[in-house]
Image (cartoon, rainbow, N blue to C red; front, side):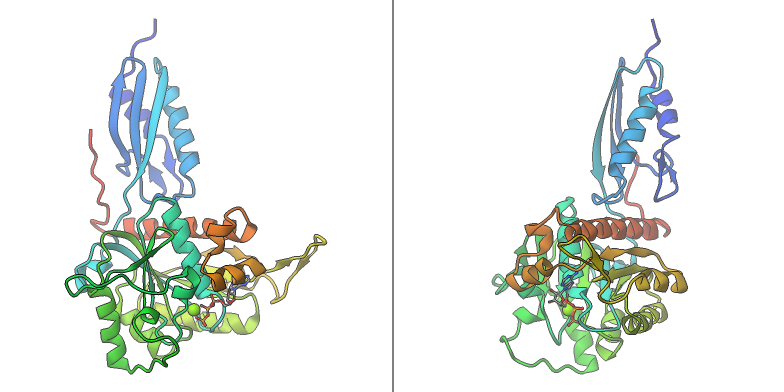
Length: 359
Ligand SMILES: Nc1ncnc2c1ncn2[C@@H]1O[C@H](COP(=O)(O)OP(=O)(O)OP(=O)(O)O)[C@@H](O)[C@H]1O
Ligand SMILES: [Mg+2]
């Protein structure tokens, strides 16, 4: 008869399983919780750094295989859990339980920032993360329309209560002013509006706050990026040259502000036609090239699909209405990529990990 396995043997086996994104093993990263070994039955939780972990299935499978290879183990039960690390940037400026704020920017207008913001937020929420979406495009706030939200709930004790849609919490200047009213801001006002936006909103606990920025590298984007302690920025571009030039400028602005660049998304990369051919309406490969030149990660390509526009106009985003479409899948993969990059960046900082080993 084989000897019963010990906890030490199981921990040693798990110590051989790598977290591919964080480049260390599950034990060193303190990801193993509630380890229980009873006879040949082993059970434990794996605490990931994001519920949107793109390699969740792979990690679970490898952990299971590693433990099964320990002599005497008859069964393995693994619970997948997550705790999103905080990169610490949000602590200083505003006292808020927001773990990571991610800006979505571009140099150019109309490249799909708001569309990407909405769908990434929804994809992260679908994975189980607590997500907020801040429409910081104070000149042309589009998020309420894209989410089909017409008003905010009544404020409570002088705090704004975000609207809720598709499991995300959302706030937008578009809901604070009369529709159609032009919005004119000057630098200092802009800064204080953003601070208020953050401090006076009852966000509750959030793993990710996605911030949809106005286009350009002008005053607005600049003061926004300064007013907000951002964990990182995502740059959206089209594959065409003029968009790339603008995206490069947007990227450099964030660099100057010492905001880490999480990566570049190429939107409207191609259009698949009914006859099976593919059309590169705005050229091809530009986003990857830019990522290469700027030495930042390339987060993925999003194809064109008229359903994206229909979804945006009708308040029913494509990740909700057509979750299996190539566009929704691309956006979901990108959301997972972003979550992984945020984890990697946060774990690089001291005291970033709220995770402690629990036996
Ligand atoms: N992949 C796509 N396929 C088809 N239409 C798209 C796609 N991405 C965005 N669109 C459409 O393009 C238009 C512009 O997108 P969006 O408003 O998201 O861009 P933006 O960068 O936020 O613009 P702005 O600079 O004005 O804030 C919208 O009508 C949107 O529905
Ligand atoms: Mg927009």
